[in-house]
Each structure stands twice: as structure tokens, then as C-alpha cells.
Length: 147
Ligand code: RB5
Image: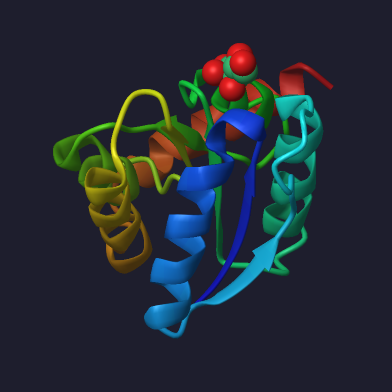
């Protein structure tokens, strides 16, 4: 398992906790910034999404203040299915049903304890496929219409 991770200034402290957690689980991590300095979350989302869509990593994690800005930016990238999650049910089902490939979290919304558990579910839950694939194909069609 290889994960690309990124944050803006609001998500930096939480990102450090998530990186430590992933390292302890022997998950390879590519850190796309920032390093605590003030920055614009779409730039970081773009970097993490490029790692995901190029198949250089299995999945991505993005952290900002709410997780929402990162998810809006990430979902503009073809092939990205980014989900903002702040509780366990959503992260489980966005993997099972949506094959979400980017997890977005809000550092001003959830604490590190929840964030690490959400990250754990995100990396360990496999997509169910089956009837859900038809819906993901329809999402891909929407992307093609926009190009
Ligand atoms: C930064 O202040 C904040 O706007 C950003 O981290 C994020 O919450 C945007 O969605």
C-alpha cells in the first residue's frame, strides 16, 4: 500500500499525525506538502491527485480546515473520487460502494483519534464492485461529457 498525502496550513498538524500512523503501519507515504507554511489547498490537491491518477500510489489523503475545499478541488480531476468523511460509516461505505480513491478530512472538524481510525478504514476496506461499477461508469461518462 502506497499513499500520497497533502494538506494546507490548517491541516498540517493533523497530517503529521496521519503520516506517523501510516509509517507505523508500514504504509509507504509520499508527502506532497505543505510543510506548515500558508498555501492554497487546490495546489496541494492537484499534486496528490496526480500521484493517484498516474497510479504512482494506491490512494490519496487530503487535509484542510474542513476537508471540503480539498474535496471540491480533487473532484475536478478526472478519475478522482474524493470523499470528505468525519465518521466511520461514511468512510467504510465510500470505499465499499464509491471506490473512493481520495479521503478528505477537516482538521478543524475532527480530532486526531477519529482521523487515524478513518484513515485505517480507508486503507483497509476494499471496493465491492458488482452493481456499484455501473454507477462509477456513469460518473466516468459525466467526466467525458465535460471534456
Ligand atoms: C484555510 O483557512 C481554510 O479555508 C481551508 O483549510 C479549508 O478549510 C477550505 O476548505
